[in-house]
Length: 368
Image (cartoon, rainbow, N blue to C red):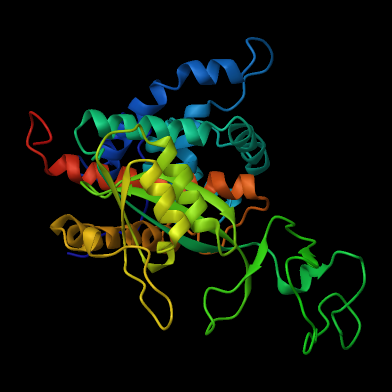
């Protein structure tokens, strides 16, 4: 018998949002981790907001909404508000009732900027790592480090001489006229982007084009593959090694420690700096042409070196997830501070996904 195409809504409906979310949905285990971390930030939230005045969007709801934007690759706050308006799963995760009004996208963006200003993302990242440590997921002895390029939200046409002259060689009127830079030397010393002055022109290799970019860096522990440090710097040839040392300094000291890295870190200054910190540098050997590696058989002969070289490649999973799902391939923010916050939030989301998967596979009673 053919079913009817008519829509007959009930006069009264007695259902909770929780009833619409499957018991095995991946967001359930992630939400528990998020809520526990946000509860520990209550003191920080109290210090940010005034005790009087008009109530704003709850910071806990803001953070959950920002995480949804990363998890589901939502490109803008406007689209995020639209999704929350009719998506029951999103309402449930954020903490909105089925008949609660959804915020205007401009109001949401203003409140989001307050969280960025007070570095709430860094505090949230730390609390998530505290949960991972309590669950026994973190290694405190063995780490890996690497960096990736983040394309800036600025075009080559915005990269103009600092002295105010015009080297665009534009043909035709209008702001989108075809530019011609042939034979013109353009460098970060003489030029800067008018759209995002913090962005730097950078070429990843001789075979790739130069782009306006930042560099994102991650320090990963080798037991569970979780990012325990994340940092964004200006794009240059020295940012990776300096950022690695900064992140290593932020990790509580324990002895011995090792750090795995690729050939870009095989330099005498980085090796010496690691050893001064009592960190054994397990960097990939970079013997090419007349260049001689800064490490030798005293390091490479050990089994631990071979294991570090295997484990360090897992850090690319964070970069891959962040660029395909988290949308950090090209940031939509301008200014190194906001790009840094966006990068940290994306790495926190990547950690949450990984932690939820690991903990759901662990039998009750501990992490083994």
